[in-house]
Length: 211
Image (cartoon, rainbow, N blue to C red; front, side, top):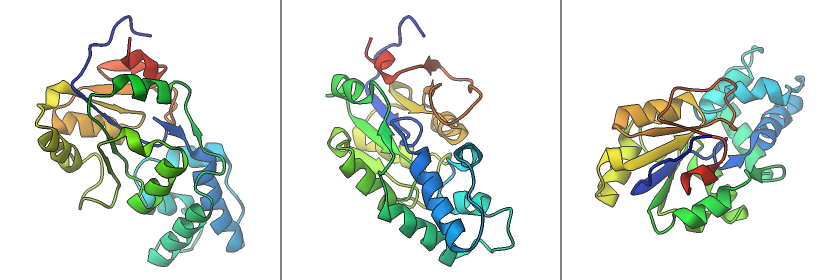
């Protein structure tokens, strides 16, 4: 745990693995689709490394052991399965709500590679939506993370320089987005990635942003 993390003028967060632990619901959507197609379910530990690069990439990885093509039809099946049960087993990480309350009135945003259609009901169900000035999904811009377009849009919206806004995440696309946009990066060690990433700050809890 760092002794002191400087206050930033704004904060951009990843969603899955940073604010919420959604791995069981993501694995569930993938596995319900696999089972419906006569395939064996994958363990949650197997699915975890597949998360972080958007739904099409998740489906591609989740069916890589089969001869089933990763086409739009298959992606839509997994999407529907997730929408049917978006938050059955999803939990907000400890300290997240308290940290978000403390960070306001600094502007807060989310940039996720999860499609907006899947992100919106999750934020609503978990009562997190009201904390954020903007929430960008993986299909809101032509390019997903780590492309900096979404971050640059938010920086312009807030009229803040990149170095004054902290990107907070748990995956390689989050770190690379921060680097591509010229932003500092805080790595969430409690998230989905097993091995820590190089970062400006290392977090065991979002509450460390408020100290």
